[in-house]
Amino acid sequence: MPSQPDETPVDPTEPADATAPEERAVPDEVAATDEARIPSEDELERTATPATVRRAPKFSAFMIVGALVGMVLGLLFVAIVQPGPDEVGGGAGLIGFLDGEGSVRLLGIVTGGVVGTFVGGALAVRADRRSRPPRLDR
Image (tube, rainbow, N blue to C red):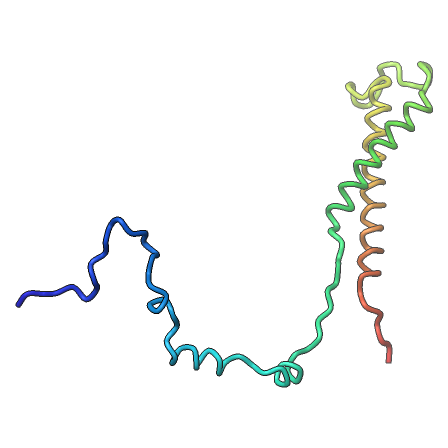
């Protein structure tokens, strides 16, 4: 028994999606079931709940920017104050590589970064609290 293909042969010179518009049309049964699933305006108004968008801050961004600003301010503070040679340790520090003016700069940068991180975190908490709707205490 010879088998015949269910589809018509495809011409290789035509583009793949060059089908007739009537072949691409949605059958009436499918269109009727899709229309039955679409709710009316009245039904949408009854069932829909209004939504509000809360724009919460990114805590990590606040803290990173705070740390960077703190580091720059710490370095500027050390550059403005400039400890004299008598004020900086003479090589007898607790950790050998933290002797001299470089250690003062490093400590200024680290301290500024830590303080800036906490300030950035505090600002993020404040911004987060302001973005929430007010609480209704009963």
